[in-house]
Length: 398
Ligand SMILES: Cc1cc2nc3c(=O)[nH]c(=O)nc-3n(C[C@H](O)[C@H](O)[C@H](O)COP(=O)(O)OP(=O)(O)OC[C@H]3O[C@@H](n4cnc5c(N)ncnc54)[C@H](O)[C@@H]3O)c2cc1C
Image 1 (tube, helix red, strand yellow):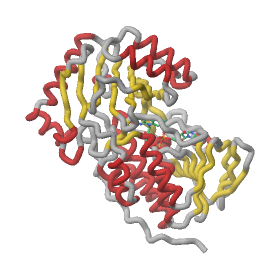
Image 2 (cartoon, rainbow, N blue to C red):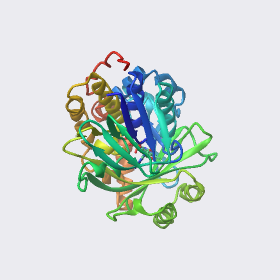
Image 3 (cartoon, protein in one colour):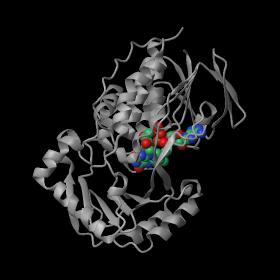
Image 4 (cartoon, rainbow, N blue to C red):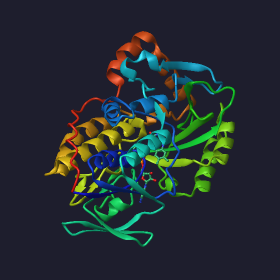
C-alpha cells in the first residue's frame, strides 16, 4: 500500500492521514468544501481519544486552544441558575465539560496541520463521483472530471456521507434520534461567562450557549421533531424554521436568533446514529461518523473519530487482514459509546412547562455534591474502554 485517498477533512480524515503519512504512505485528502470548515461548538477529547492526541504530539496544542469552559449550568428562562456542574468536580475531566474541551473547528485545524506537516496533500472543493475497485487498485472519478487511482480509499465524510452509497446500500444505516441541532457563532454579550448555559423551553426545545476563544459565543438550538428532511433545506430555509420554532421562547433567544441570522458558519443536522454490518468493502473503508456515528449526545463523537483513525491507520500499516482487525478492535468501543442513557434525547427536552421545571429540579439534585460524586462514577462515557494497538514501526516505501 503506497497511495491512499481520504474523502472528508474534518477530524477522522486528517487524523488517519497523519498516521498513514508518518509511515511514508502517499496520502491525498479530498474535501467537499472550498476550505477547512471552521464551524461547530466545543467538543470533548476524552480517554483513549486523548491518548491518540498525545501520541500525535498535539495534546498540548489542544489544551492551549481549549475553550476554558468552567462547567455546565442549567438556567431557567429568567437566567436563574438551577444547577451547576463544575468541570473540576469530576475526576479526570469526565463530567459534562471534559478536561480537554476545544472548538471543533480549532481541533480540525490542529489535526489538519499535523497531517499536512507529515506530508499529506489536500484537494479542496471536489468530491468523488465514482469508485471502481478492480481488486488491485481503486480507480476514482471526481466531480471536477479528474481521474486517479489509489491502493486504498477511506471515506470519512460524516454521518450523511454520499460516497458511502457507492459501496453499500445505506438506506437503513442512519437511526434518527428524532432531534435536530443547529450550531452557529454569535456576538459575545456582557452577560456571557465562562460557563456553558443550558435553557429548556416547553415544546421540547432547548438552547445552549458556550464560551469560545475567539471573542465570540457559540450557540446551539435543539428541538425534538418527527419531521423529516429539515437538514436538507437550504440555510435560509433552516434559519426560518428556527425563527418560527423559537420566536416565543424567552431567555437570551432574541439575540441568539439575531446572531443566527448574521452567522456565516450556521450548520443544522438531524441527530442520529450510524450502524452498518461491516465497514470494509474491498479496498474501500468507512471511518468516523460515516461508519459508526454515535451522535453528539453521546459525548464521544470526537474521541471515536480520533481512536478509529489511529486504529485503522495502524492496522493498514501493519498489513495483512487490516480491515478485519480494525473492526474487531473498534466495534466493542463503538457499541458502548452508542449505548445512550434511556430516554435520550427526549428527557433533556421536555414537552411541558411542568416537565421543564422537573428537569431543572432533577438537575439541581444531580448537581448537589453527594449525588454528583456517586453519579460521576457511573455517568461518564466509556472513553477509556479500548486497548490501543501499538503504532507499527514506520515503513517507508522504496
Ligand atoms: C461544520 C461541522 C460542525 C460540527 N459541529 C459539531 C458540534 O458542535 N458538536 C459535535 O458534537 N459535533 C459536531 N460536528 C460533528 C463532529 O465533527 C463529528 O461527530 C466527529 O468529530 C466525527 O468526525 P468525522 O471526521 O467522522 O465527520 P465530520 O466531522 O462530520 O466531517 C466530515 C467531513 O467530510 C466532508 N464531506 C462530506 N461529504 C463529503 C464528500 N462527498 N466529499 C468530500 N468531503 C465531504 C465534510 O465537509 C466534513 O469536513 C460537526 C461537524 C461539522 C462538519
